[in-house]
Structure formats: structure tokens, C-alpha cells
Amino acid sequence: MPSRQVIENCEDSTRYQAAKALLRRKVLSGEVGHGEQLKPELDLCRDLNLSRTTVRKAVASLVEEGLLVRQRGRGSFVNFSRTAAQQRLLAFLMCQNGFGAVSLLVQGAQQRAAELGYQLVLAESQNDAAVAFEQVVRLNETRVAGTIIAPLQTLTPERTTAAVVRALRQADQRVVLVDDFSADDAIPSICSQNREAMHKLTCHLIKKGYRRIAFLSSVKLEGVMEREEGFCEAMREHGIEVPPEYFLEVANRDTQVQGRQEVDVFMAMRQPPEAIVCLHDLIALNVMRRCEERGWRVPDDVAVVGFDDLPQAAVSNPPLTTMHQPLLEMGRRAVELLVRQLEGETLTAHHERLPCNFKIRRSCGSGPGVSRP
Image (tube, rainbow, N blue to C red; front, side):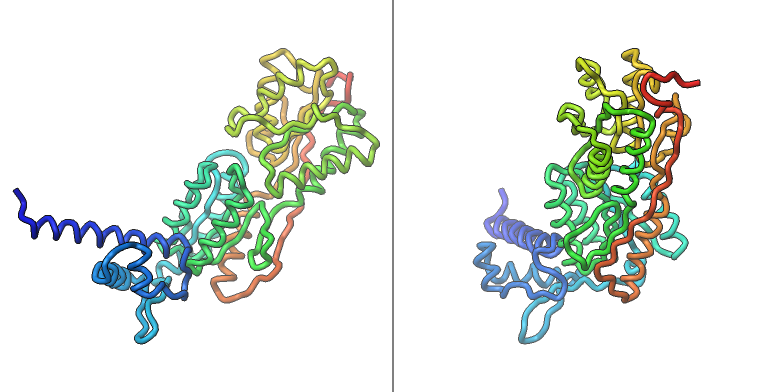
């Protein structure tokens, strides 16, 4: 049977480890930011309900790790100093890698980071706010110098992105948003001309004679809303009303099936749409596959268009009409904007918008009721 002294030592060790973990979390989560003072030891003792000896030992351990520095007569302060190797470490935080536009953004960022002598770490939020924040803690613990953030498709994307940006900046990181915007002009961003491109794409369908045009959208991110606005503006300019049942948000968050269920909804309508405008190519490709399964011919029975110009768009059956979004270039520019900040440049109200190129292919057809040659 263990002695009382052994038990007390184990309890002391457990309390110390708990205190250290709680204080580390406060620092790495951005609750206390770089250069900010940690609460006095007596206040921490009350907050943690632990002895001053235990708290002092936990603080000393974090000083040894380099997360805190002591200033005589003033207290302990958060310190996110970085080694030369850590100063060359960047990260890319995204909703999901390997699918759609994000994979090309990452590819462009990796290429440019390597060219400039930086290492790029990848982190995924898995479309979950809690996971996104855990990734932030991990990146701060790794002492990443700067992070690129792609749209985080959580249930509350704006709130999640704002919390992520704040936690990264509290760790003295530089941040760039790609394909998204921040209300904070201190955060530079880069994206495509979403509104203008979707307006042009929709006008092309209207000029071909389509009038019953549906739109498949998704989570209300900044870029998504801009594409919606471009679509609606084009329809208004031509005096075409969009019935509510033609304007749908895809029900599924899995990009591998988005749009399939909505095709079934359209086909069940007494007057189905003549053309379907999709928020991005993955939805459009799913739509075309579902149309084929249900015996709806593209473009003879319904025209389908997308947005992004992913590699698979040109080789689909039929080839997909879409807007080429300069995703590789956006990824490259995002890295360049990070590096400029790390080199000391202040980028206030710096928001770049890159133009898109129209890729006209067979999926948009020759107009309603006109068979393709």
C-alpha cells in the first residue's frame, strides 16, 4: 500500500500538470496574447483553486518552454518569439483538402512557399468550429509565423473565421484570407471577381434564350453571396423573375453528393428549369451525373454550368461550361502577401480581386429546345 507521502506527491504532480495545461491553453488559444501580461500569481491561484507553489511551478515550466518571460517587478508576459526555422514556417488552414477549389489553392501556395524558401503546414477544420480551433492551438504551439485561411464552412462561418483570426494574431502570427474577406482591414485578402464572373455566366445563358434558370448555392460565405448577387443582378437586368423554388441551397455538406438531391427536386416540378447555374464545379458535375441517372439529357433537356474550371470540368460528359477561377495564382499570391507582412510591410485595406475567364463548352447547349449538333 503506497505511503501517504507518495500519495501526496502524486496529487501535487497531478495538480501541477493540470495548472500547466490550463495556462498553456490560455496562451495557445489566444486568451492571453503575445506581449500581454499573465494574471498575478495570487489571482491565478484563486482562478485555478490551487496553491501558490503549484501555480508558481507551472509558470516556471512555461518560462522554460519559452511561452512566458518574467520581468522583474512586473510579472510574467506571453512570449511567442521564434527561431530562424520557425520564422520560415507557414500554414494553410482550410475546410477540407483534396476536393475542388481548395486543392488548387493549396497547390499554388505550396509552389510559391517552396520558391521563397518557406515550409507550408496543412491543417483542416473538417467543417467543424471546434476542430478549427484545435488546429489553431496546434499551429500556435508549432510557432508558425503566418497562416493562410480559406473559407471555413462551419455552421457560423463568419464567427468561426473571426475567432480563428483573432487567436492566430494573438500568437503574433500574420494572416491572409483567401477566397474570403474580413471586416478588419488589417487582414489582407485575395479572391476572384465572383460577382462579375457569375453575372457574365448568367447573361450568357439568357442570351441563348434560357428563361427558367435555377441556381444551386451553399453555405453563406462572402464569395458565395457575391456569386448569388451576380446571378440575381443578371436576371433582374433582363426582367426575369427567379421563383423561390429555383433558388436552392444544397442540403448536403458533402461536396461529393451536393446537387444530386436538388436535381430530384427540380425534376418533380410541374415546370422544371431549362438551365441550372451551380455555385461551383463539384455541384455541377454531381448535377450532370444525377441527370444522366434520371434520364435527363444535358444539355438537350437542361443546361448546366459551373464555376472554378477544375481539371475534371473539361473532360466531363458533356464538357462543362464554367468560369475559370485563377486558383493556383490566388494560392501563390496569398503566400506572397504573408511573406510581405513577415518582412515588415503593413498591408492595410489590401484586398485583391483577380479576374476570371469564361470557358464555354457543350454543357450549356444552344438554347432551350435546340438540340446540340
